[in-house]
Length: 338
Image (tube, rainbow, N blue to C red; front, side, top):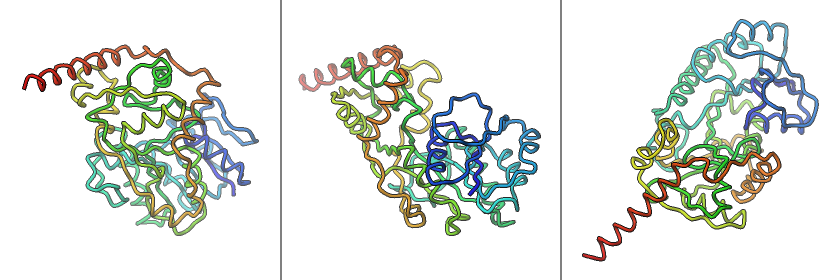
C-alpha cells in the first residue's frame, strides 16, 4: 500500500516508517525536513509545513494514497482541514491521539476506551477537539478513521523519562549514584510502551475494516509503580536506584516555573490502560517488548548519539533530594520522641 505519513521523523513516527518499509509498503512522508532521518530505506519526502494549510493542500493535489497516518493534528481546526482534504480519497485514515484526552484521575484501573474524556493539559484538550472532529466525520460521512491513544512512548530518538519529562540527565544520575525524586510514595502507576511496539499497532491496523470508527488505547503490557519503574530501569543497566519521595505539591513548589508541568498535569495520576480491544482487532499487536529490554535499547542509542547531560543538569533536583532527606530526618525524629 502507498501510505502517507504526516510527520515521519518523530519518536513514534520513525518507528512506524521503519515498519512500513520492512513490510513492503510504499511510505511517503510530509514534513519540514528539519529533523534527521533515523531509518534506512528509500522513501519519498514531500517538504512542507503542516501549519500552512494552503501549502499542504497544494502538495496533496494529484497525490493518491491507500492510507494516511496522521501524527500532526493537534487541534480541531487541523483535523477539519484533513477531513476535507482526504474525504473520499483514502480507504483508511489513522490518527495519533493520546491517553491525555482522559485526564485524571481515571475512573477505573485499567482504563478502557469508554473512559470519560476530561483532559487537564492543553495538549490533551487539543487532541480531544481533533478526536471529536474525526468521530463526527465518521458518523456523518463515513470518514474511514481509526484513532490511537498512546501513553508513555519511549525508545531510540528520546532520552528515558522521569517526572520532568524526557530527561537526558536521568541515566547520568544513576551512573553517578545520585538519588531520583518521585512523587508521593512512588506507588503511582505508570505504563511505558516501546515505539517499535506502537508501530506494530499502527501498521497492523492498516486496511483492517474492523478498526474503522474506533479508538484504541495503544500501550505496553507492563504496568508498574513509579518506584518500580526506576528500580527496574537502573537494574537493566546494572545500576542501583536511590529513590526519595516528596508530594506533588512540594515538587512543584521547589521546581522552576514550567519545569514540572508534566507531573502536575499527568504524572501525579495513575496511568494504566487496557489494550485488550486493540489486541482483539489487530493480531499484529503482540509479543511486546519488556521494560528492561527497552531500557537497554534506548540507552544504547543515547550512548551512541552522546545525548546524555550531566547528572547536575537540573540543579533543583539535588535541592529537592536534600529537602526530602531533611523531611525524613524530622519525621523519624518526631516519631522517636513519641
